[in-house]
Image (cartoon, rainbow, N blue to C red):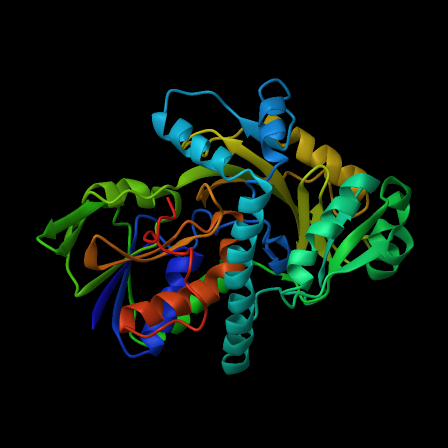
Length: 419
């Protein structure tokens, strides 16, 4: 079958690999000059099954309200004239109940666990170096009450086979000695020994090369403008370089997927949530943490990739702009420098980055066909797209083939009253 994938990010590229492995003739089209040039380019680098919690939770409305006046908040809601943001926000708020939080978290967890298994299987089959560190991840807390609430919520994970351990501050230091200078600021952490970190950009580009070796064609520098339909089928992808045709089409354009889907009357409830990262050089002899993780009270993530130390954070409702200025990183860097003062060369020129996370209002990504039998959806993975990539790719490949996926698809498609 001739298959055309829109999007060469981590999800689209991984999907191309699985479909090429199944023997299909695959083409990937992307507006950028290479794979992983947008959200996957410089993400936080965490493969974090234990971070599968839905963002829409009972705590979220209060955090969003506070963000209207606290510009250093980790979750920022910027008022603008885009009606799509307000429609999405209303759907998000409807999911901020304890019941919906549990349902949505378990749906995300279902994909994350499956994806972790698929990634482990893939790595047994091929040699793929991407500065990965399989040392677990730490989810650290400064507030005792918050940690206890998180530990109770983590029962969702442990009841479903994810190993999560509650650690004291002294145990945190034994796991990651870089916490020693600041351990008194923390009450403890949740530790997931099966989570890990690595460079998503390196992973994606190496997987693209492997796919190319299996016959996949990557068409870069061609921006997708829309789809052309005829009756019950998609006939072509319209790009700024002309039309491209195939038997089957897969939409994996992240935050830009809704715009393309609208061209043929398909509504995807996805909105971009902007995130920020900053990378610094590190060297031997510095107290650089090798166990990545997240400060759960200030929502700042960290990870080491080879000779690079990266920190990231913020979730900003700001439309489709990826513009940034140094001041946008002030709160993130202040927290990171306080946590790990000797982790890297903080005086070096930072490598700043901002990207758009494609978020659904309930949390899980969207799979399956939409209105047209040959249009498949594999998008909306939010802040853990890399964590979900292998499982999502396998699910999409199975659906394209007409096979039943290995996991329950309840709540993961557009049908069934999800929206």
